[in-house]
Amino acid sequence: MRILVKEAISQEGKMIELSGWVSARRDHGKIIFIDLRDRSGVMQLVFIPKEKEVYEKASLLRSEWVIRARGSINLRPANMVNPNLPTGKYEMPVSKLEILSEAATPAIAIDTDGYEIGEESRMKFRYLDLRRPRLQKNLRMRHRVNQLIRDFLSDKDFVEVETPILSKSTPEGARDYLVPARLYPGKFYALPQSPQQYKQLLMVAGLERYFQIARCFRDEDTRGDRQPEFTQLDLEMSFVEREDVMDLIEELYIKIVETLFPEKKILKKPFPRMSYAQAIKEYKSDKPDLRVDKNDPNELAFAWVIDFPFFEKTNEGGWTFTHNPFSAPQKDHQDWLTQKKNIPEILTTQYDLALNGFEVGGGSIRNHRPEALRAVFEVMGLSEQKIQSNFGYMLEALSAGAPPHGGIAMGLDRLMAILMNEPNIREVIAFSKTGDGRDLMMDAPSDVDEKQLKELHLKITK
Image (cartoon, rainbow, N blue to C red):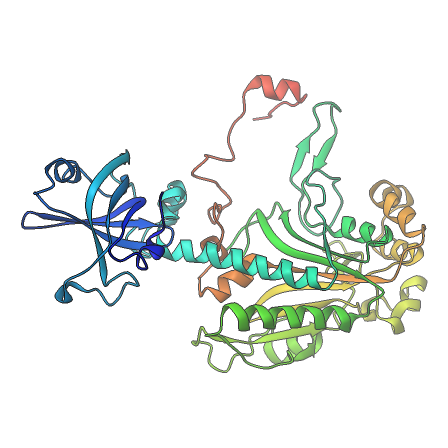
């Protein structure tokens, strides 16, 4: 039965079976050395001419071939110990070898960290790119962060709920990705920019504590810390104030760092808090970088930014929300909202979390009364027909007895990029898009045939 390389070092003198990829080959005189790689590490295999059948088969092996090898685990000679490998004291003289799969010469080098290779090549051959140890480590650490999040929130009585991917197009600040509905010609679903409305509806439903590691979609220009699709930790809580949500996230993120990234140092605990006005005045940014040494990748400077303006002017001279329309104003400004006065002075309950100059999350206490939410849409200049068309179900739901509630959405891609010392989020996403939003490996976006378009009642205008 196959065992992992990392387990082999406890099997000295025993016959075992290893399976994996040929990571490297070295011919020293008549002896062939193969580094076999599996998900747990690398083991040196040894082939000698005396084992004629196995030796001849080993002479065929090339980089990235997949093999199964059987032999006994022995200590290496003292002058051949590799102190840089956990398995560096051991080797396996092979008595039986099976070639499971041959491999073409890799299209890109995978024995480096990959930074020197062009993005287009790496994304086109992503299944090869992901074999490099750096990206394997990134994905495994991401798994451990997700696992910790799930355990932490479950212990605090949160329930993980999956919300729909096919939903309704509503104005939430970015363009929607639209999906034509074949059974309803001329109508469209939209992919969710976030689970915002669903999580509020779960509070109306009485769930009280919800979370989800959610996929979100926004049709906007991409850059290093953005993708057309991304992942966020989404959560909502009933009967809470702003401080309850902020304290929960602070506790969670401190635990993530101290448990999984002990080499990192959090600059200040509890996290500093500053107003939006202070951040702009002192740092010229609403996501300030508070690090003492900005060249130190192990220094983490978290900071909460609060007291944001609720509304800002549009290019057309009207009003729009600065974060999302579902936020509640601060209590002292509730009357200003409902009376639609002092609009530029209304502050929202929004709270953003910055880390080393990046926004890694944001949330707010919500408008749980329908008349307050309606006032937001009226300030934005939406007609009654438009309010009902886009948000009528939400107003109706809030009229069914909605508890006070608030929540937050935390960008997991950005967090992982910072914690893993990566230059952008593509390095911590398994199958990421290029900087301009293309999937070169799958060749997407791509054309579709006329039959599909006809079924969807669509025509392409050149």
